[in-house]
Amino acid sequence: MRVKYVLLSALLLGAVACEQPKKEQTSAPAKEESVAQKVEQTVEKVKETAQEVKETAKEAAAQVTGGSLVEKGKKIFQQKGCNSCHQPEMETVGPSLKKIAQAYGSVEELVKYLKGEAEPKVDPAKANIMNPQLAQLKDLSEEDLKALAEYILSFK
Image (cartoon, rainbow, N blue to C red):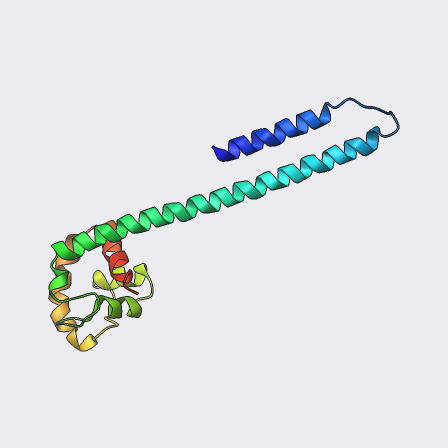
């Protein structure tokens, strides 16, 4: 919406600048060049502002989406009983969430492990304890697995 107002303002500025009465016939080309330059500058500013608005909107959307995914992941983590073996900072039966988050660099990597499609990066010797637990995650959708991974990776 803001972009529309900026574009409308630029067009109105250009129209007003073009309709000014000419005082002298000899200086008309110079004034036209000056007006054209001002219009070009205004258009350039509008483009820059539009780009800034676009980037800000993307950042805001990412924050909102990321935040809600983390919350959803936390609920899944608790519902599936993951918190009985994994704590945020402390190692218990399983590694801490912080240690897991540091080992897996991306959501995709962690989701792959949660699906059982990758080898464990943290405490491979304890994999035989974790493997049966991963079976509980088979019924989760791709979105739920990503939410769970987002939650775990939020402890980096």
